[in-house]
Length: 176
Picture 1: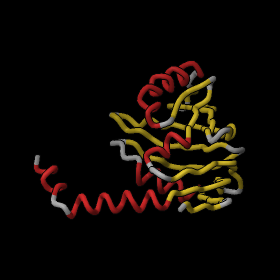
Picture 2: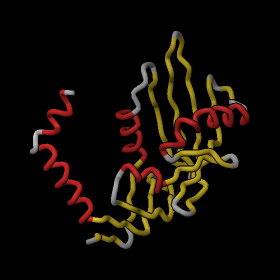
Picture 3: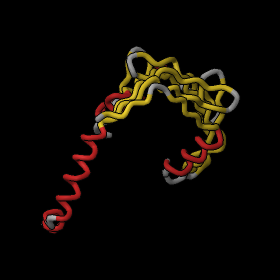
Picture 4: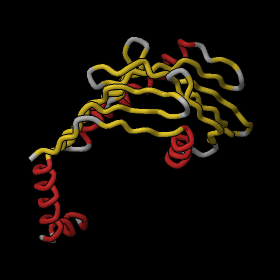
């Protein structure tokens, strides 16, 4: 049995995304001040304190979505109000690529590519197809063209996990 949804559009406001970033990005000395959606780009300002305050600004633009891969470009980074040269940004992104490729994030032809299918491998039995991402009037909207979930496989996996816990084997495995 498979559950299907033909289409759904989900949205998040600048305020909500800012709150989520503040909640989930926990780096000592790093604070985020403002986030805005402009011209299909996310603009983020903040400060990093390490002996001195280091203000920063970054703009990340969504180029598009094709074959369930979201393509973004880092348009601009300023640190201490000085622009960072493009080649430095490219080098930094390439350096991080090795660590992120396993998670579905790569760098191709000047663009950061987020492979939704690869990311969703961590969510077994669920597939979704991203159709479009648009930012306007303070809202980021993601249109999902299709969502498929293999409910029987999810139920079987849940039953297997429950049986494992009830058998006492999980407790033995955790003690080992």
